[in-house]
Length: 133
Image (cartoon, rainbow, N blue to C red; front, top):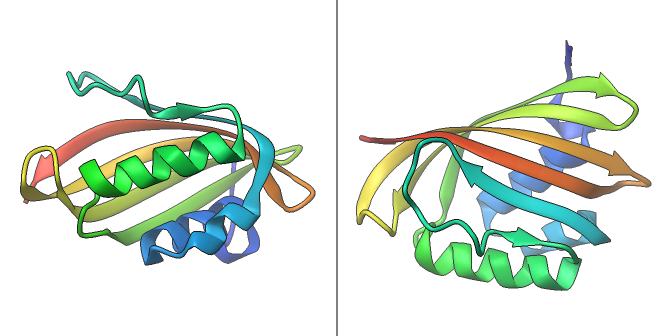
């Protein structure tokens, strides 16, 4: 795996826009995106955190904003690694007010993504932890 500058990858740009609350992130998403967020050893209901189209993803992001990130998020680190062929493994470290728990937390997630033609068409995020600050 080769570390790369987040600004040179679509996933890095997408996560930066997400952290800024910028809806232009959807311009970086393929119409037929395959999107899912999973949680490691967490009892949270994440069944709704998946989408098979850009339109469905918009609904997921709205709900994430309401329930998980009601005060937005602060990206502490966006660290993509090039796996070749448009694939990246990205470590995303963030701090946010977690609406589910009603408290400030930090979290590290790992995102496996694929980008083609300047758009993300595959996105699998695994939330590894949500730590109270």
